[in-house]
Image (cartoon, helix red, strand yellow):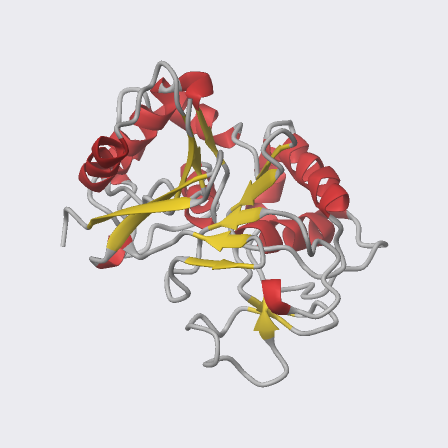
Length: 271
């Protein structure tokens, strides 16, 4: 049995099939983790969603910002942008089933046996891993429950930009969502900065990649994330980034998590 984590697919179905072939993936024995953003900007989001859903318990996918944007569009709380490629999903005969399945994906997946935790984007320095897991469950309960529609209408925004234990309501949920699905840089007090999206070194001074902030309370944990194509594939002090920019014509990457860490990449099949 092997456990592989795969970076942002974003509708690149042909590339995903090529990567699974390169891994010699066996759906009867192996497990796949997906770092989020299964959909959007690539040519075949529908096929990707169907493939991952049909794997059942053999696959775990956490929610990314593009996945949440699709849910917001479907719920009528976000307009489709010119760069979006959601139409195949929205007009599919099984759209309701797929969107319901997507809505019930976690925002954080933690495997104690593997000593590994996956989410799409990042963790602020104030959160321990246990706290992050608790807050993930809090957000997931809203996304899966009767408060879903109201939160979708109020999900987008950059404020608040720093964690406080006394945050409540949609401000609290929005900050949690932004950490798990959007963050790249923050300062040492945990203040998020969304304007900078390039590689480390291009950001405004006083900000750091979230995983390099001194005193980060989740330090020492084995973490896997995607979201940051400009960062690329990297392993640093147990933190593994996996978005290698497939949708931008680069590569789709997997890492084996059981045993010795080993990366496998395939070139984009849809340049």
